[in-house]
Amino acid sequence: VILAVILGLILWPDSLQEKIKKRCETYLEKHGLPSQNDCEKIWDSFRQAFVEKDPCEVPPDAYDSLIHTVSQVSQEPTCNRMMFWSKTKEKVHEFAKKCSYVTLEDFLLGFLLDNLTWCGKSGSQETFTTGCPSWSDCVNNPVRSFWIQASAAFAASACGDAFVMLDGAIDMPYNPDSTFASVEVKHFNSSIMKSLTVLLVTKEGDTKTCESDESLKHLQTDLGSNLKYQCKVVPQSQLQTCIVD
Ligand code: ZNA
Image (cartoon, rainbow, N blue to C red; front, side, top):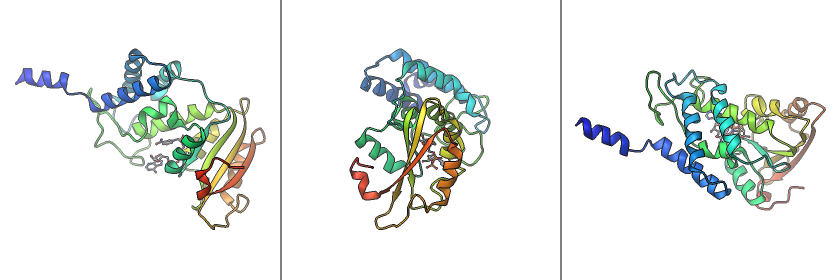
């Protein structure tokens, strides 16, 4: 029995580990940077961020080592094509792909962990994908802390003209509680970034304008005077084309 358990542990892949390593290899191959070794290194620094910790006590900076490791392996930021988003996850990735913009999820760091849930447990070496705290259960949960730190790093690297896709069909397209407002905007670096253009996606026939939206005034204020602000209304059907001017 003991032997069977040991054999089981060796042969039964840690599903999270397998998934992330597979994603890592796929990504590096696609970008012409294949290396088994790097994916092993990346898994190790990911793991150490939350394994053996109470899943409500993983602060954002636990991922600094992962972010450092990934930045050594991966590609440079793509100036003038970077796209942020808030409440537009489905739409933005389709549009970005079609029109060659790059979101956090198109970079290795975001690609590895998009749509995954993970956590550890104090006193255990295991990784879990179920029974983990959800986004608002506790502030310092492994998933939320990861996205905060990844978003901060992504925003800090934004250069040239950047874009953000916001949902014009909701009350507060620019919501102060969103990761975009509370983390990303605060990390923009005006010595490398020139402008931010809002693509405000509206429903067909909606008369909403950039100027009529109160929340966007706060975005302009938050950007300060060193970053140029622009805004374009994009009716949803126009997302099929790549013309946003
Ligand atoms: N790929 C991601 O899951 C992700 C990406 C998660 C969080 C942040 N990001 C960054 S920040 C990305 O680069 C975007 O530019 C920014 C989007 O974050 P946001 O402004 O907070 O937008 P959002 O639509 O409110 O949330 C984005 C995603 O975060 C959601 O799809 C959820 O997966 C998760 N999330 C955020 N708030 C909650 C939440 N899940 C559960 N409850 C919440 N209250």
